[in-house]
Length: 443
Image (cartoon, rainbow, N blue to C red; front, side, top):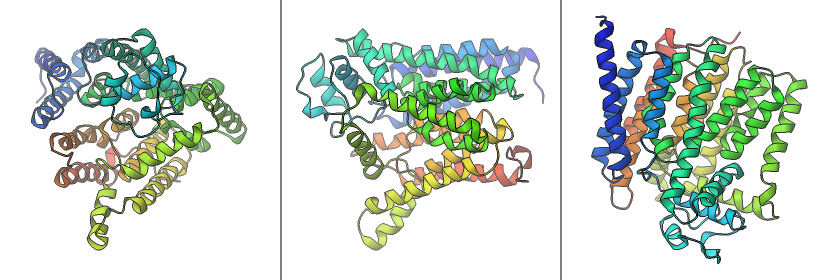
C-alpha cells in the first residue's frame, strides 16, 4: 500500500528524531562493555536508517545530506565510546610535534616528557609495537597535538573536526559523482545515513573517513581523465590507510599502458615522498614489522580463519596462527587481485563491483576484521546494486560482544550468524536474484 506524502513526511521526521536521540545516547551515555544496550541502539539506528531511506523522496537530497552532517556533528564533544585507538593517535602526534620519529621507538623507549604522557601510555592498546599509521595520518595526529597540547579532550575535538571535514567533503562530492556516472544520486544516502559509518568514523575517530574522501577525488578524476591529479590523491589516500595501494591493479583493466605507467610512477613517488620526513634506515623495517606482527598475531571477528583454526585445533591441539595466518593472507590477497584483474572496467558499476568483491574476499579471509573496516564496503556498494555490505554493516556490530566478556571472549555462534547471513545474502544477490546482478557476464 502506497502511503500519502504527508504520512511519509511524518514517518521520515519521526525516524530522524529517533536517530538524533540514539546518536546522542551513543555519544554521551554508552559503555562499550554493555553489549545489550549497544546492540539495541544499533538496531534502532538501522531501523530508522531504513525508514529514512525508504521515504527519502519526501525530502530533497540537500536537506537529507544536511541531516546526515547533523548526525555526525552530534558526536563533536564526546569521548569515543567504542574504540581506544585515539590514545595512540595522540601519542604519535605528541612525538611528531616534539621532533621524535613515531616509527623509530616503542612507546616504552621514549624518554622525552610531554603533557599527559603517562596517561596516554597507560591507556593505549598498542604499547608493545611500533606505530602502524602511515605519514598522512601522522600529520593529522600532529595537528591535534599542536592545537591542543595539554588537553586530551581538546585534541579529540580537533581530530573529530578533521574527520568531519573529510566526511562533509565526501557527502558533497558523492552525489555529484554518481550523477556524472548516470547512477541515482540518492544512492549517496546509503553511505551518508548509514549508522555504522556515522558511529565508527565521526564517533570513534577512525580515519577511513579521510582515505575514502581522498580516494573518491582520485577515482572521480580518473573518469575526468585528469590522471596526474588522480594519482596524487590516490597516493594521499594510501598515505592515510595502506589499503588503497591494493586497489591500484584495478587500473590495469581501465587505462592503457601509456597512461598507466606514468600514473603508477607518480602515485608511488608521492607515496614514497610522504615518508621522507620520517626516513631513517630502520624505519621501513620497524613499520612493516609491526604490520606483520599485527597480521600474524592478533585475531578478531574472523570468518574462514576462525573456522579453519577450530578444525585444525582438533588435530594439533594448539592455535595454528603462525602457519594459518600467512596462508589466509595469501588467499585474501590472491582473491583481491583476481577480482581487480578479472575483466575490463567497461562501466563504473563493474569497477566498483570489483573493488567491493575484492575487498570483501580479502576480509572474509582476514584474521582481524574490525567494524570500521566494513565502512569502505558500504561506500563501494553505493555504486552498485548489491546490498550485502549494508547488512554486514549491521551484523558486524555483533563483534562488540567480545568487549562485554571477561578476558575478551568472542562468541562462535555470533560469528556464525554474522558471516552466515552475509555470505548467504551475497550468494543470493549474485545467483538467486537476477535483477540485483551488477556485474555483466564476461564476453
